[in-house]
Length: 148
Image 1 (cartoon, rainbow, N blue to C red):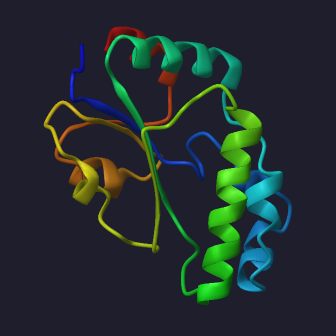
Image 2 (image 1 turned 90 degrees about the horizontal axis):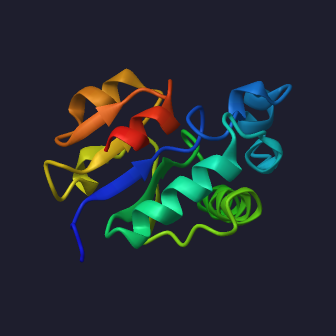
Image 3 (image 1 turned 45 degrees about the horizontal axis):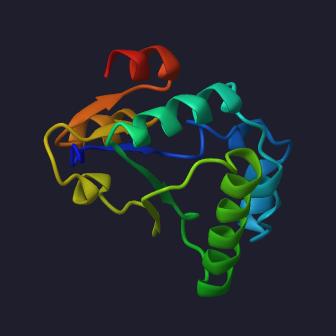
């Protein structure tokens, strides 16, 4: 039974520790996609995958809404997109995402909210405040998912 509710995740600073990669900003300025592939997970992804797979079996859709780098060339945006997709495949291989939106920096994430019950987990307060569904900080993701 489809619920038509999507559980969405930002990546950088939400499930992937981009900002914990040494010299991440310098590498992004130099258009080096390495931080996007080297970022460590910010939570236990095996537990997250189990929960997401159960939710998907129960009718929820699963999505990613992640921004590309600020002021990047088309070639770098392509490299970042590939790096993010590889990161998801490596760290959450059992999760079959219904939609992955890797979009230009600053794209309003609420554009991807199709239902007032849709969920967004995002580390940026502005994105959570603008979201037209249910939005949560990155704290206690697994506990919040249990309550949904």
